Length: 91
Image 1: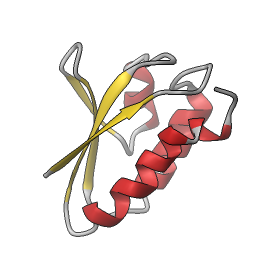
Image 2: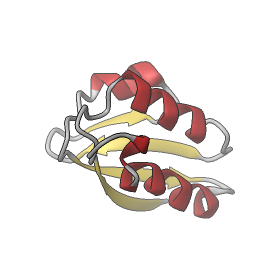
Image 3: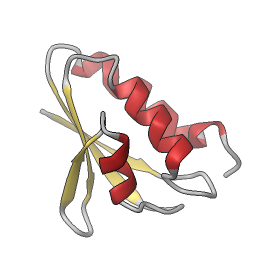
Image 4: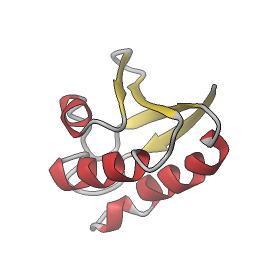
């Protein structure tokens, strides 16, 4: 299992549109992909929009992507790039 720190950069945080983008992209990979809020210890399935929304991660939230599976090394940079780009929204 690999862990990758990410920061929510976009102004609206991990809201419905951003969560949808993340879940849709994560679902293209076979690996188990989870997103954790280390301040609460809560870990959710990154392929589930509803679970992502329940994190209520606002702008500036420091999270950790956990990936395990055959394509984890391919998925990690794709998913971290979503966070780095602010999900294509203003930061």
